[in-house]
Image (cartoon, rainbow, N blue to C red; front, side, top):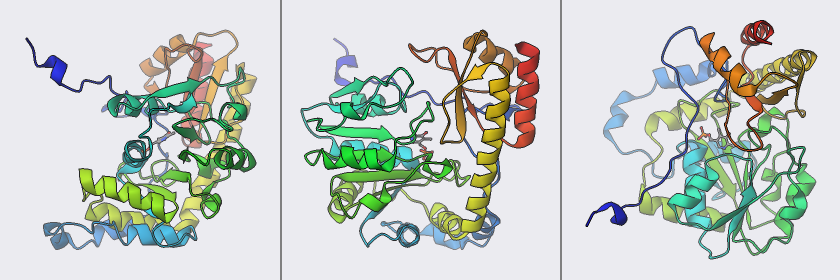
Length: 350
Ligand SMILES: *Cc1c(COP(=O)(O)O)cnc(C)c1O
């Protein structure tokens, strides 16, 4: 006899390494290389510390309201969570309660299958095409229990046009379609504008990548009022006070500094294009990226080897020893100086 069989055991998601040593060039978890807006710093400094005595606003106001207005949405169409991982986890728990399998690509954010496992949600993967793009036909009129698409997809960096996303949403009125837009600001079209038209669409975004706030943990779900209510009902049944007072204050300040947000995104996109050109000259190949990373394969050098050797030089990138993607490295776009160091290190290796 043992208690093991009575316990919910899972194989957890493995995040990229967060090295603690100094002098590291960290290109492995798609964080922003620039600091958050000065307005965020000011908001945190000027926060009323005494308020920490009280529970925070249960609806995460004014964060939810500020984000709602910024996106031109209606009251009740926004949900906030502790990073989009928390938001997505709540979405899986709320919207995927069918015996039919939920579907998503074989190569995508590797948290999706983990949430399915932990919540006992049946799922099936749909293989990406050989060029690592999604075949829309796999999702149109799917008859699935639910659909999850990261757009742009990770770790591939490729995006579907909004017209294709709309076809998928429109052809699946009997299930919820979650579009995870963690990287949308770096070059894809957001589906937020479709929320008014489709009551089966949920769009998820995060402040971790394009708004330089991975450490704050802020993410959002946006959808019609009914879907957001269902999501809140589940959230209030698990943990009512997920958004703490400092994140609400700092998150609002980040939204208010739109100029800074646009500026850092433009810088990252410029560095990405420049890095892409240099990597191609060195024998790397990859599809055009709509994100803040490149998913690159070298014509001769082994990805696992490059990954380990870069690490010895204190440059961290991401490598998965998994079928179909073991020849690839996912390289986050850092500052111009960091990318210079990467290119120089690669030149020594290859
Ligand atoms: C980074 C990422 C997330 C989660 O980010 P949070 O920090 O939890 O907001 C979600 N989806 C994808 C595809 C990501 O790459």
